[in-house]
Image (cartoon, rainbow, N blue to C red; front, side, top):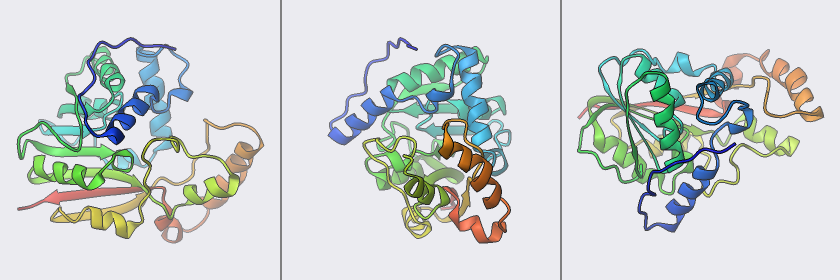
Length: 267
């Protein structure tokens, strides 16, 4: 499958950021599940269906329809699967990404859905926006892949308005999936990315210290995989998933693969 873009590459001086940009230009997230042509409405629908089957918690944690008329920025928007939901809910959305391929596809996604958005190829560690430009900043699964997460946090805090909300997710180093990957010797998605940092809850709390208030909730527990096949996948789907989900949630809650955070800027 191929897709043609015409956007110029963003000028960068940091070799690591260049490597990150180049990697994500070549690796569309969840591309393996798509059978429809890249850039078609069917392609975007398949990615949406797969993402929200895998991340069943997300619409409960994030009220995609609850930001009507709010200015919302997504950093690392990818092909705008989540951003489309915010736009459909009435938010005034802006999406940025280092990868030109992602921005081109994101534009196509929202155009085909009849939704409006502003898109820019931009470095999330050096945002080209004025202070206090956004009511909401969303960065789901981005901080762990960037070169300097502390810089991105500082920028999120800077462009967020007073009483604004930042919604972020990083990977939990002390999680069921991290352990399962090692035991089963099955690599994690994008484990070969130039940067992949996993956090403990305490480390994530420290990263969020520039905000006035933050809450971290471990999420994403086992669901049957559609990406892997064979004996290991069968054992995972028919054995591990069923047993894990019988355990008391209070016991397994800290082991969630995703550390979801809601942080606020009050002064």
